[in-house]
Length: 440
Image 1 (spheres, one colour):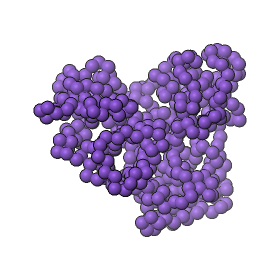
Image 2: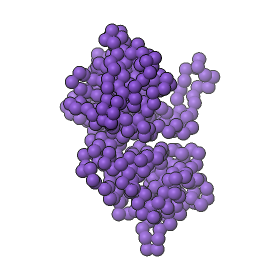
Image 3: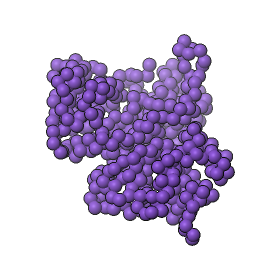
Image 4: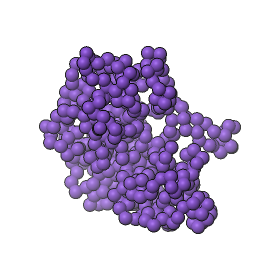
């Protein structure tokens, strides 16, 4: 386990110990030198970033990382901290990967074009594969089987693969990355990668190659999987490609382009939620206060609910963002989850939550999520807003307005109307949105 396993709560625990011991004693105890470049800004104080992350790792598995066991800097320590929602000062800290855990790569894989691909789709994507059965397990190494069981404790998973000509690209892909399965001018499904490894024997059992054909020897499981029907033109607009781009072969995207695709499609991976501390990792053991439970710890083994992709909300967000001018759109992750839209525009920063329906339960869900996310939002948020596909009934709109929350609804293709909350209500509620110390 490395620094990527550190959660927001682990960092808070390290910050509390730093406060208790004082900077000099804390650094001496764990063998770190004072930070030269990057410091965490929290609660009006500055903390040595590398030391905090190294000690935070102690709460992952009982082992605090020593200074020589990992590197500091914008691409490592700062990337972890900003992804978890902490403010870091220092050179290039602003450009470190951040947001909704989206240092993830985006793999675009043709999967529904040829007859062979469609047959493989039916065999290993349309239905789970029981990989613990003798037919499959005899081809797995102990390490590969353990890796699969980590993500799929029930012994079954959906799988896809790649041939050796894609080895160079697939070497960059890892757990938590996002894959878009394409075919017939559409994204046909979206998945989050779980285990990934090379095993020609297992690949040939799942996808028997034609005579003289290539083996799909790079195998990856789907930690989450959901069907979609998104035109190539929509994806190309997000990625900055020409509208008629056909995605003819395997692509692996990283950095800002991958983030644009993942954020734009409103994809939320289980890995991003784990990184933010919003949900438990597979088989994670957590200690609970004794007064809450007779046993001292519990283990999370049940698979997570599907949270990867909501087609209706994604389409609404894409259409709304396409109507904006002079605004920057992004997302952020926190222990509350991953928000839909964090918008920086001429009137300041706005947090927006989209809902696919206008019923009372959806309105209440938007209210709860906005108030929860707002506590963790980076910077000062001036507005909270709920986005809907059509106008709300007066009672539902009044519920949101009483909490100072604006309503935006769709009135025509690409056209949206804002119904602002009363200024007085927004002013009364703003104290709940302001950044605060959430370490206790």
